[in-house]
Image (cartoon, rainbow, N blue to C red; front, side):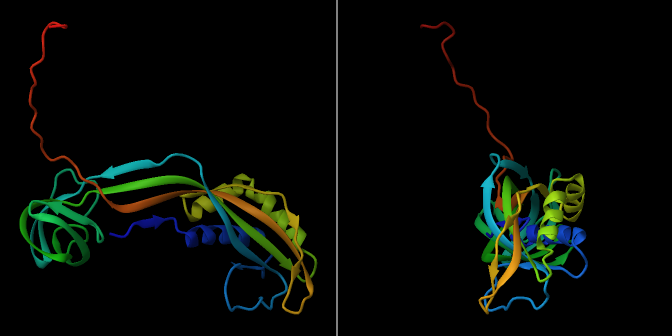
Length: 246
């Protein structure tokens, strides 16, 4: 089982990049700041993004979703003939199967049929069983404060102005609407105070650079976590004394 993370680091940086491009002058690119064996851009004006930290904002939130189905497991193949009546999610590739005669099996691919429904699936390891099985999912959500340093480089001494524009708009409703339009799981919180941070290039020359820490909230969801559900249970009574003490 491989846990799926969403939004990813790439998703967060993509949303921030799109916002920066929307408020910066045309022709200024926004790029990743920590890349090996890549020279400084030839363009005089550009912005770099460097992840700084991730802080927890709240305790985890759990979302449990049931998924059951009737199937025949034979070798590396599973044939699903019917879905359960209370399914909250479809059958998903990467889910772990549980049920009678199956200690644990992983769905590796869907090979035919309705996506996530009746059809054939590839499983691992090989199994031989039939009956009603489950592949319930648990999603764990954490609210995370993500800080990314934006480095504003310029050859015409406009880096301070560009930093001001982005920092100022990060604390504006425009940024909230724009970034959530790109990814609803990401919300800008604020842009920290701009700092003048001279940059030394490969020729040991100082370049004009200002930096701003962009602080965002990302509601990061982990999915593809197996979750068991109760199908039936036996209820019994235990006799107790009518009067206490006896």
